[in-house]
Amino acid sequence: MSRWLLWLPLVLFGIFFAAVATGLIMPKDNIIESKMVGKPMPAFALPAAVEQRPGLSSADLTKGKPTLLNIFASWCVPCIAEAPQLLALQQAGVEINAIASRDTPEDIANFLNRWGNPYARIGTDTTSKVQLELGSSGVPETFVIDGDGIIVHQHIGDIRQEDIAKLIELLEDAG
Amino acid sequence: MKRFLVLLILCFTAPIAAQTGLPPAPYADRQLDDPKQEAAARDLMEELRCLKCQSQSIADSNAPMAGDMRSQVRERIAAGETPEQVRGWLIERYGNWVSYNPPIASAVTWPLWIAPIILLLAALWLARGRFRKTKDGE
Image (cartoon, rainbow over all chains, first blue to last red; front, top):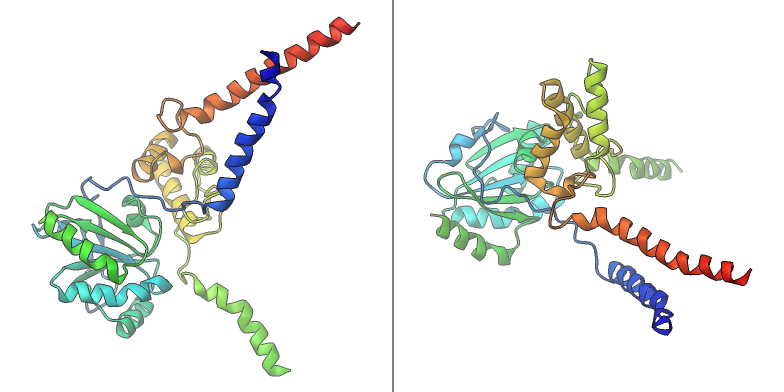
């Protein structure tokens, strides 16, 4: 019995070593998913971010048609990378609304002039209030919302070419 | 030399411009007028995790998002919410992950509370054998 116990510290060290090694080898998963997926959109009303588009309120998202809600910012580099994909989605007939995170009207207008404007409405969220309501932790993020305003899916990070088909499928399923 | 200096200055200004240019939210760095409410808000901020810089509390972090969270915490407490209500509001959105004071009765977080007790008991049990031996030696 006590002979076996002699090995216990070594076993414990082995477990400790394995825990540290996996932490070093596998990068930490820093993505925090919103717990609001599956729940109704929280009530909000944001003023217009630019002159060309109206502001956005939660009532705009319960009109019977599934929509995308994109959170972006002019100071966000991955948002530039996903701009062509958003334009492609818009051309495929998807309604995309947006929340501009911590941004100024001039910067947003410049961003849209330069990289395209796929949005139907853009609300400006200068203090991240609505972003916190949504359980979103950064930009860019895109929510799939069904016609009744229920959040169906959260896409964290920029939308790549290969994500478009999946998003369209989710929108069709939500319709 | 002049060019070098300009370059040097640019090196230091670019990172500042890289983040949002907006001023922080109203109560991000401003204390509440009621010292009791401010103390309650402050205690809660120490226990909420920053979403951007994930090993810091929002009280410690300079990230704009942490400032926005501080402002939300202060505004909600000033409006009469209890710290536990504010914490609950955030947990509803981000999960237990966002709180540095995880619940004991949760399927994922209970080991955080039990593990230290088990380790302490194991250490006592290991030490027990040692003490007995020294007594025998005397």
